[in-house]
Image 1 (cartoon, helix red, strand yellow):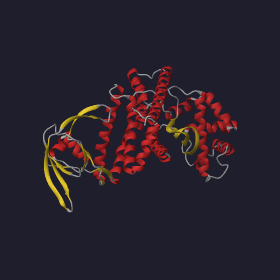
Image 2 (cartoon, helix red, strand yellow):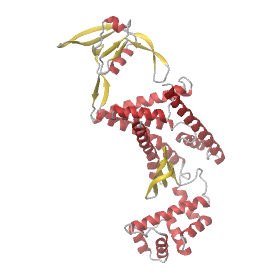
Image 3 (tube, helix red, strand yellow):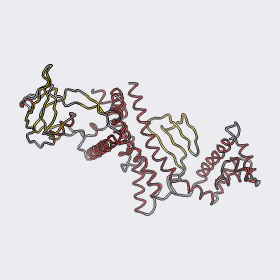
Image 4 (cartoon, helix red, strand yellow):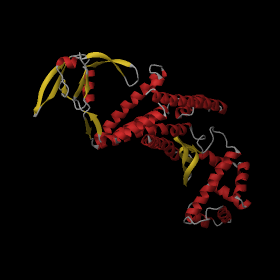
Length: 451
């Protein structure tokens, strides 16, 4: 149980960091100020300030966020917003002075900052720049001037926020998220899901290089009355080739039979013969159609011969180049399956109760895969990373896809939606997400109760 919980927490933490790092990196690249990078939601239990950003850990797990400068809509900032912005500038100045002082106690205090502001305003700019380590920015210079005049950082901040000088507002707009161009905002929002989608083949390549377990094509159980038994196939037989094409794994065998289209196929077999070397023979088998459950929960007809694997496993290691190629193919197929699965849930083809799982089920699977080893746990993480990236692109308010949908409407209309319309959509989105989480949690509990 502890392993399941720990595995789930670690997996979610990794995927959240990857997702939010996408938003963070793109925002920084485009010049937007990032106030906080948090893994977990408030209350904040730990954090450290580096540069302009507070890197924090929240007490509520299974989530995270990147908070950028600015409100939801691209309007001139309110006095309260400007006051918050100026307090960030004050912290920047304190950290710069403290760094110059070698971290000596008291150098990041308000008296030290006021003394620096007076020195800065007295005309000793060269000395001030030396202490700061760089030229003061426009917004910093304005705050230093106000502090030198008032003798108090708090009073200077409140005065500037109420006065709202145009130069200060322009500095704010240059660094705030909502006032960026539509293209920049789209780039920042879409970077999160894309980070998860791109992370999947990178991790999958590591899994391929580490070694991927596979089931050997050795016959175990056979179904009576099916083509394999009628043709003389026996438990313990190793399938070497199908229709002259070599097979190495049970999946290779299964794919070859399904691709036969019902035509008679030749199976090259190595049959154990006591202490003597294996007997090699060829059997011709005619597949039949049989309904099978798919990964989407529905049934479909497939060509089969009526055999199950014995369960012998091997491990295949890939070189770097081969691993990259295989990872791209594998994650591409997995992403396609996930998209089809989501579409089937939406159109009702797959029952939601059967297809959806919540944190309890994820923790159970994570624990099971952790027991199996790195390859299985890595593969499960790849699937979750793809799911997180794809689901976040859905046009649902509160998800990244919902923001992208709003941006699309803004591009068509030529102006953003009114704030009250966006707030209403966000409430609806929150209601939907709460309802979904409640459903999947009760669904997990129901699965446990009914075994």
